[in-house]
Amino acid sequence: MKYSATIGLEVHVQIKTASKMFCSCRNSFGEPPNTLVCPVCMGLPGVMPAPNRTAILKTIAAGMLTECQISRFSKFDRKSYFYPDMPKNYQISQYDLPFCKGGRIKVGGRGFSGAPLPEKTIGITRIHLEEDVGKLNHLGRNSGVDFNRAGIPLMEIVSEPDMSTPDEAYAYLEALKEIMRYAGISGCDMEKGQMRCDVNVSVRPEGQKEFGTKIELKNLNSFRAVHRSLEYEMERQMEALRNGEKLYQETRGWNDDKGESYLMRRKESAHDYRYFPEPDMPPFVIDDALLEEIRRTLPELPAAKRARFVAQYAITAYDAEVLTQDKDVADYFDAAAGLGANPKSVANWIISEILKELNERKISISECKVKPEHLAEIVRAVASGAINSGSGKEVLADVFKTGGSPSEIIAKKGLSQISDESGIAKFADEVIAEFPAQAAEFRSGKEKVLQFLIGQLMKKSKGKANPQVAAKILSEKLKA
Ligand code: ADP
Ligand code: ZN
Ligand code: MG
Image (cartoon, rainbow, N blue to C red; front, side):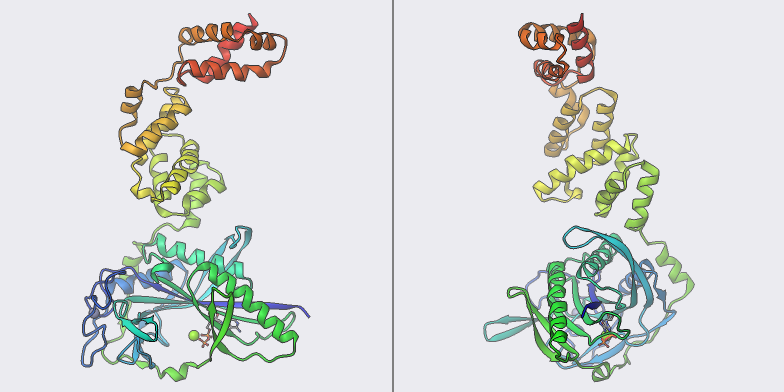
């Protein structure tokens, strides 16, 4: 019997704001425990929540960027539960009227292993806004609660059960992260808990119409863990069915060290949470003017940017993909290509020189001392023949260290290319005199040896000769 899997993801994304969702405490990561707290986010009795407008606007922006319908009327609800991460024993969340519903995103590109993945559209069921809760830190047999995280605005993005492989789930997460980062909605750094993900997965015999029994996996703290746990869990469920076992709807944890999932609990259903409307906050009316205000803040998304780069700058689809992976890199390319340097060359220099260097130094492009105008100047100097490409790389390396002006570096280091024929002719004569055997080889028809002679000439000129002119003069002299 063959089985196929069904996967749906519930992704929590912390929203980048100055302050928390319902109070004025700072929204920040990595501070000493319980230093960013107040009576509101500690859940003391009698306090009043005051909603953060930026968080709401960013949630709606996330909905627009994922083609959701934006609700014109929305409200918060209380989700009751009992756990020490929230002393008031409820979380302010949204139940039946989330800000965004019924969207979709295109995923594709690459799977976890880097293998190409066909493009697919994944439905978004809803995006709602809630407050994050405290974080339990387990210290031996005792546990402490850090409420710095409590009250940070948190979006929950629920997907339709539209995925069927671990690679699709991975690509979906990549696509979501890319959108959120492009729009400045969230840093989506999983290590900082800014993006967290629960995975729902079921399997069914191929040909069966109804979905199989859904199992939810929790504690997945990297995209790799999502991919691995799905591979494991699909196989576990299929094996159970092959053995005639029954599967129950349950919540399982993932142990990344052992590479296994384990039973946490059999699943509760929504009515256990006793949702009811938040009585301390009036509902929201979202009008045309507000939607227009948010629409004006939306960025150009990676897919649109890629298409534009290919059309406007005539670069390859592959180069456009590399350049748009990070919005700052894309903006950098846009700026440099707009400064009169050949866009294809600019793309090449960024991809093969700058990104490589940034990677080695483990810094981002915004920290790079080579600004778009520096790169454009170097690319123009190489294109015009003022310097050769070897010197271009030397200038780039210098700007990387000093942030200095390329033209001053060219002058200071005397890198101006020698293109005038008399200067190069002198070097050519010397090379032919010093390497008579190779010169004779060339004359006897082995023209490949010319590369060697050009190399010698370049060396004599300390890399400054124009290689094309050198080739022309050398072969003219040898043939004469
Ligand atoms: P619950 O009420 O248990 O939270 P939902 O219907 O809200 O369940 O779905 C939660 C997530 O599980 C969604 O992302 C959805 O796409 C996914 N899902 C629903 N049914 C299945 C299934 N049979 N197999 C896999 N994923 C599913
Ligand atoms: Zn607070
Ligand atoms: Mg649910």
